[in-house]
Amino acid sequence: MIPFAFAKISGSSAFPNLSGNAIFYRNPKSPGVLVKVEVTGLPDTNSPIRSNFYGMHIHEFGDCTLPFDKTGNHYNPRRLNHPYHAGDMPPLLGNNGYAFSLFYTNRFSPRDILHKSLILHLKPDDFVTQPSGNSGDKIGCGVIEPLPPKKQAFR
Image 1 (cartoon, rainbow, N blue to C red):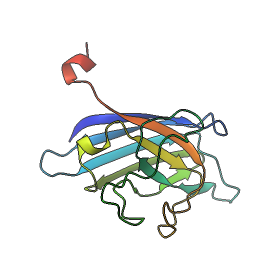
Image 2: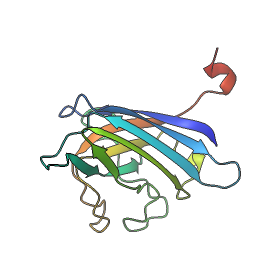
Image 3: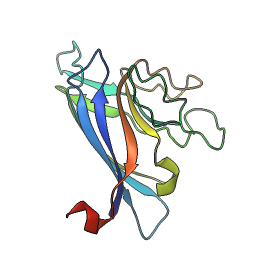
Image 4: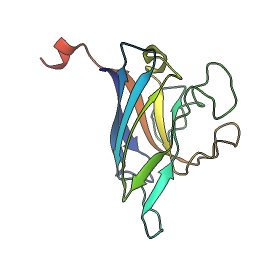
């Protein structure tokens, strides 16, 4: 797997301690993308197990200006119903404010997602409600940027 893009995730005004990174990897043997996300500072729940699910999507525009209202809708080039948008992703499971996720998808190619935004939502995606799964407020955002060529990255 070859890393080709990353997103530095920052929290909203309501969750300024939320931060993290997403790295996107190209698979030279197939058209899909491996996505690795690590986040800290997620809001805890009031449940005894202190874990919660958070919606995670790729949105159309890479503008993470607070309050994250310029990110557009879910990335959906085929104009499909939710949850079949190219930008619909598995929920993020937070535990005591920390989450790690690793998954493979062929819903988009590497070049499709550059300069779009990765959004974390306060509530889990219900995978039913149109148009975006009723996942609530945007609590984290990161613009998906290309990684520099290897020679430039380590100079």
